[in-house]
Image (cartoon, rainbow over all chains, first blue to last red; front, side, top):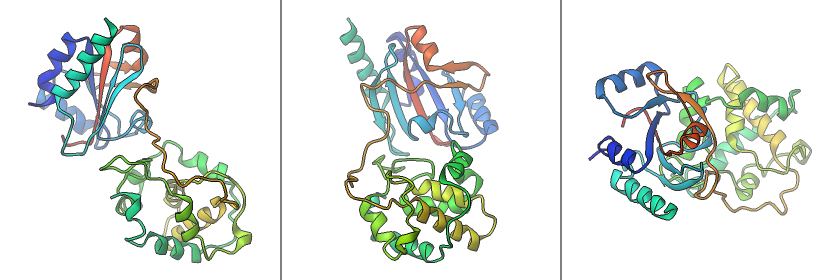
Length: 97
Length: 186
């Protein structure tokens, strides 16, 4: 399963997903988004305005308070699974209760 | 590839080679030089330099960590000293007590048109940036990426539908955010 298959689960658990392409053209990213009907927002950050404050091929779970709750520093072909992100999100929600 | 492999693949020799071609100090101050590259992705502007940098360090030129293992990959005191061992002492201007990342040097070099003068420029930058006194500066790598428990850096970016996204917006809406950074093909 890909991350996109978890988008509804993420949303139900109170989280949105935003994906950013950190290289390649704006047009390429737009084409990709059109072709895949992603179901979550995708942006192009080839000017590195955002990723330079974070890191490439990584995933961050940021709480509703703006604090980083989990960080996965992935390898290019070995991304964190949607299940792991969902588990961390559920932990975050359980903490808040 | 981590920085621990740098020695094996001969980075000091590369540095040394660069160092030997150094000319006396450039007229621009490091602060001026820095202002010209801040926020720029040199690997996008100069593919050759970008590729070399990536081969040497395993990371993008703008990054402060290894691309594949995400380990911090800044240059340590030992690496500086090894690379700069043959530098004449008077060329070591005490401009900074910080160890500057080679990113700066390469970013500076990319502004120079031909290879020979680029090498010279990089060398000059290194010479000007090398700390005069390295005592008390730790060789320990530091994890410079945002940490769990820290406030996430705010950002503003538009998605492919033209919708603006900002971290402060998600916070205002009381939504958690899963922020995924990927290279173009995923």
